[in-house]
Image (tube, rainbow, N blue to C red; front, side, top):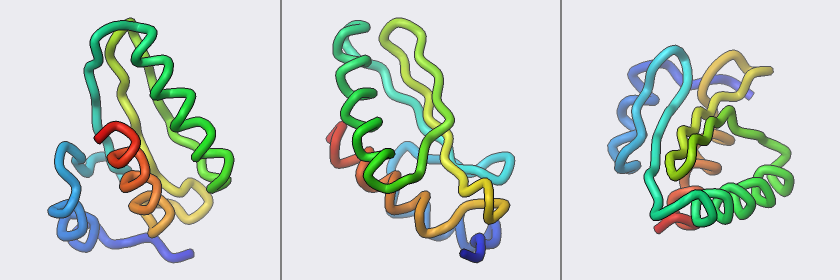
Length: 93
């Protein structure tokens, strides 16, 4: 799977509110009511990650969740990352 160029990623991100491109990956962050709500959405995302066989780099502190997506074996951002970002946005929507 061929990674997108930086220009292509930036163009595609116009359709993704709250996502940014940096360091060869796409990133977003969310803030929830509390830890339980945050952990619940992380669990839902984890099930999708397993289904897609594509796992995020993420960090959670209390009610904040930071997510980074890139396709490591392709060396950058690919269709897999945009598909997953779309699913994450739908889950959180």
